[in-house]
Length: 530
Image 1 (tube, rainbow, N blue to C red):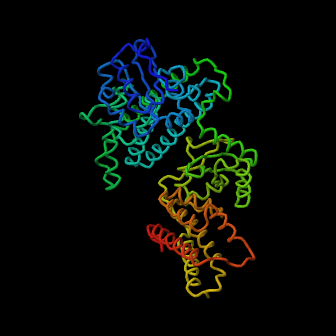
Image 2: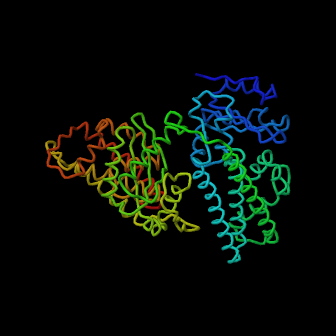
Image 3: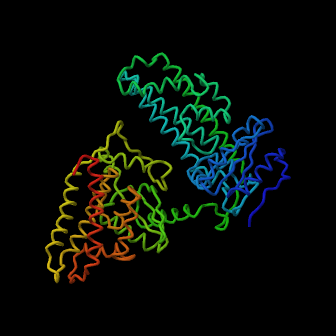
């Protein structure tokens, strides 16, 4: 049942804002509106949570919201519901404290689905979020110090630019609840001044749109290209360091304030009906429990979710020992059997030392996945030693491409020359060609060569790398219906059957291989191979 905003709520003394909020609920699908105010001396905060991502920017652009601080003592936050749920799970204390069930003044969703954190249940998420900030900051500072020791002023400036971005990103999350990655750093700092007035005192304005210190740091991008460091002002280094320290202090103070607020919430007993976990969180939790019951692992990362009309597929990275091709296959079969028909899994797994020693080739793939926000489970705090200035390598890609291309060519040679009453071998060549194309495509597109996974898992990785390939599934279904990958698995195993392929089916196989072979050739040519 839809709950309408109460215009007589004492907290909202500004009737004009109340009426505008009421109008928003008629125009857009608003999931929640939260009200929050620290004290009578601080601004009021209204957090508007939309059900549709596309509505966020439209609502933000409303003049009365953009100019709210100038016209009233009120600040607006507009967040997509999916983003709110994700940040809550990731330990963002702004969401846990300011989007709390106790602050709801409007809702169109069940109250049980609303965040309802207390410190005892949320502290692990909070600490993980906080530690992630400090870990990344320390890493960047160490990188800047390394450039300093090697007298690379360009490296120092560029790294501090990244450190400034890192601080601003977290200040946005802690004060506003979302990031503004599409906006330049100058504009992001300017936006923050509405929520953190003291940040304006850290920067000298160069003009109405830019800040002097940020512009000086950005100048290093040009010197990085032409090598002329004389344009950089090395005398600004102390000011840069001092400004970063003050920004870090703002982050630390905000973490402490939000922690205190979460602690102030009374512990609320919950049962399954009151669970505020989203369906995705519940499914991921079930996946983690199933995997851990089946196999001891060090870490579990969730890195993508693919929805189709049949079922949802979750992409999972496991880190631990004994995750070779056979063990991983058995684990996937066991997990899939226990989870039933609810969803599919694509599991990839490696030991930590294997990943470390193969970073020269695969770092871009693993670093994208192994981020704090993707971590579902961890029994170890060991980190990888990421390589800096990493350029992806593709060892033996030419060999793998040649192998796939030759197998495909062999299929078409046999197809052209086989007798009408003897189709033996065509299915085998088709199946082997598909596996080689899938695996090589993933390598060329993602800078990662997977284990010998099932055809279905390899194909899902192809879709992860290039979603537009999903159109190929129409041909797969014409050839084998919803059993296409089961058929592919069968023909890739030893079997002692007689081929029953019809000309119509063979023509579909021809079309599938021709299209996929062209896709593979295209992506490999972009790597100067083939």
